[in-house]
Length: 258
Image (cartoon, rainbow, N blue to C red; front, side, top):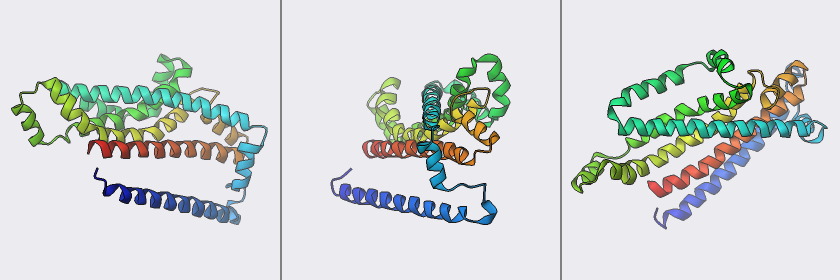
């Protein structure tokens, strides 16, 4: 990136932050206005009540422990799902004969409803590992398809240059296809981060008694609306934080390799 573009990019980043803060404040204001609608009385709590339930009540440690448990499983699922996705994409690139089968496998995995896998997971995995497996399931396809698409970003001219220089397959992958793939892969990893949290919560519903998932179910069964929304907003805020963090990483990777 040229030096002249750097101040422009910093200015754009500041504008993005400003608009983001404005959006948050507008959303909070709209929430508090909607809460006072008679039709939603008892359905949508005030954000003050949610804050009290999550931060100020005696149950705050319950929320913290649930978030930590879900975060741990989401992180493990993220690493496993992303690792499998990247590995299969590399295998499909390097072994042309296997590429159609691997691509079809990825499509089948993406099209399989997670609910249908529930009995299979319960029968084959330890109950505490189910949420990790579901998180990996949610992560796998987005990382796989973006990695495979990223390899295709290398232009024919670049391939011709490497051929003219007599580069073997290993050098072509290391110095051309992998660096070209990284910006697209970073985009896939960004999208996959919140998906891992959702997958972990979904997996916790298959019989676990810890995490955000069971907390949401217990709050719903007890008609604790503030805690229900508190758990939902806590998970959503954490997912948003992950997305923003990976957005920064994505931009740095794009600046370096594009």
